[in-house]
Length: 466
Ligand code: URP
Ligand code: ZN
Ligand code: ZN
Image (cartoon, rainbow, N blue to C red; front, side, top):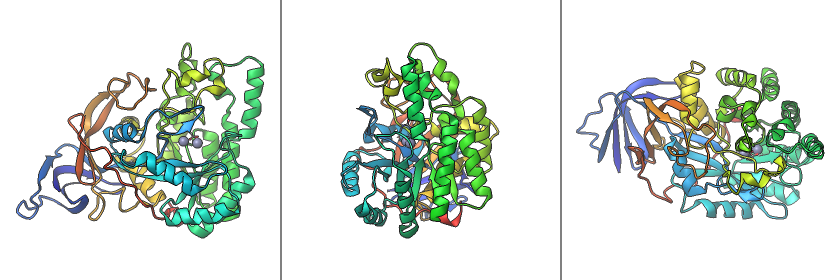
């Protein structure tokens, strides 16, 4: 299969130029101005005049088909990856969960079975660790050899995922030997649990108390502790879904000291705020996620962090639950509302509209945050995350003038609400290409269920500085 994309404005993390891009058998094989048609005869040609030709988005934080909060996230690997593709994301890194008493091998087999034959774009997994007995240390090495080169640990959700500092430290130490990277959910779960119990005793049961019992200081404290543990272990650390100025301050301080501390934030923390919890009735449940949405002023601080590279990645933490039957589980008690919200489809459009058009980040930085650095951080670069000869032909043709109204009716995620319902954005993918094959065009999915491949990842490039 060959594909020629003509006259597009090629945008990478570093470049911005008009050229033709030729792809053969899933790989970019030539880039140049006016590629001679006798040498580059393609089965399919797309005219990308006036559009951006960018590397496909890479979402390194999704939860598809994940049992959580007494239910299961509502998108599976078919519906979730189709929605991702509509939004211009062509690779994702989801999470396999090693439950207590079970092995990492077991977890990986389970999540491979969920994804294979269903995913329409390429995928990989981080491994969530809920315990780390001695045997687990060598299992970590095995995982890294098999391309699962990152591990998520939780400082929150006591009794579910939370692990103690010794476990975190053991995992960090081991990554120093096997080349893995620890990703941390940094919130002080013990403090939060006390606050939650206090609130429930006082009869404070509405969704907004989810946010009021998870203060940003609890995120800042855990972020600082995680960085300190990584410093003692002598390894890099990556903080997931960073939401607050308090946590960002810890990252900035660490980076100023020359420590390899990295973090991602997510669109919900850039575009939504605590005010959403004050929406009438039970609507605040739509935004129940951890960490919670913060007061609006945090947004500006996060944007500055993105612009100055104190934050390196924008992921989604896509973890959708329907209001009906799922979020409803917490109708009378906020602590029973499943934590998470949809976002896999709206990342590029929101960040382009609010970030690039809003004058907060450049086009190159947009690509860097949503594709190139995620690829480098998680061992996918240069195969993915850029437009270069030899890279996978995962490409988004992005129309900067297209307007889209975000909402349940226009989007494709399998969930009965959207946090951005009615928001109009400018700039959207007009065609999405995965491994050299067009999978979205003309507003339709034209790819194939199961075409996505498991990608064996290499080590993170974080140790060499990002
Ligand atoms: O509320 C969230 N973030 N749900 C997904 C699980 C997690 O902690 O990432
Ligand atoms: Zn988390
Ligand atoms: Zn998550």
